[in-house]
Amino acid sequence: MNPLYNDMQNNHGGGANGMLQRFQQFRQNFKGNPQEQVQQMLNSGRVSQEQYNRAVQIAQQFQRMFGGRI
Image (cartoon, rainbow, N blue to C red; front, top):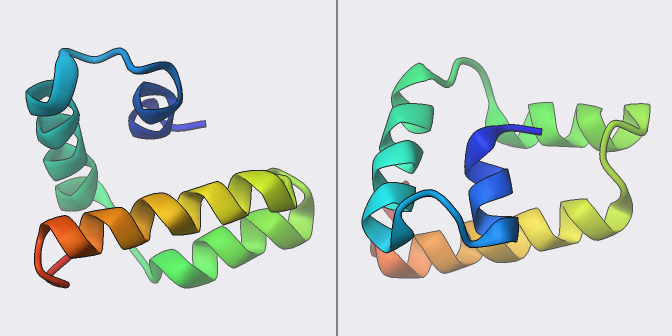
């Protein structure tokens, strides 16, 4: 799993500022279609339906925080 996801799950990573910084790094380095990649991970069994659902919730929270601009 990626460090950003681990930070969100474990509440590590320097608090909100650390998580925001890691998110920005992740976003800059990410290549491809995120929805496609997450769906492939779900289909291949790399993530469970529960993990997928949680990731969707977190993404929706980020969208609300950033006004839908992520």
